Image (cartoon, rainbow, N blue to C red; front, side, top):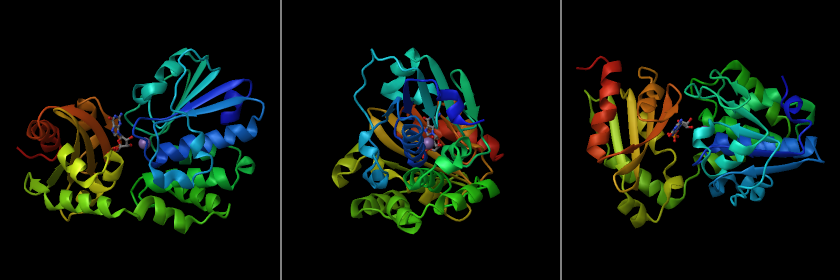
Length: 316
Ligand code: 5GP
Ligand code: MN
């Protein structure tokens, strides 16, 4: 199946992804946007997303992302990428009204939404899946760059276990378009500002191990974010840093989003299915990387998460 067959008769198309967009979300949304604009020059193609982190400014036309939503507007097709309709955020009213709804995702926790559901949980990233839904000869350097960023971010630079032979083949095809992949990996994945490094250091310093040292947890409060003058986008990567501690099976990181409200990130080495833990609290994700939003005190949240984790690790 090719995506063009599902949208070629549409006069207007909207594309969106999830709130707090990560690299795969931004790369997928922009890759598909650039592709459809090129393939369907007569159609109106719009892209809606929460403002991406500045590191993604290397993606062409990223400034065309719309954040203002005219809820009266009816699109012929609405494409939801990298999530289901429940995490669309402000663009959701446009999805509800659209003539045809397409969902393309790779999250095991997503049952799919809309009229056309392409959810493949064995894909490393939505970007990898999108590549196979595009005609390779219509891809150009700008589209390839966006898709490559998606793959790189969701695989931790082709390193996590979700990297398959197909992932590497797609990455190989994409780098043929000649963008500076080394620079892109450095600038979007590894490089951190000084304050980002400082707050990561603080979170690591204050981390605590429990459950026979098989779990590790840390938290960043709003006061800490104010002190370092950072926002949630600056906290990317902290949970992964916690997960690399030797003998840790499961890492928990949370940051305060409001009074008694925390955004939780979970990572595991495979011995815990963190998607199922996150789903108990209304979240989702993958077996080794998942997230949710929780209400309650920091310690109550740790206790509640621990129940599901301890069961899976057979710890009483
Ligand atoms: P992160 O911890 O980096 O925010 O997210 C890890 C994975 O879990 C990503 O694939 C992300 O899309 C997913 N995820 C994070 N938070 C949520 C959530 O609240 N709901 C759902 N369904 N997925 C989430
Ligand atoms: Mn995502």
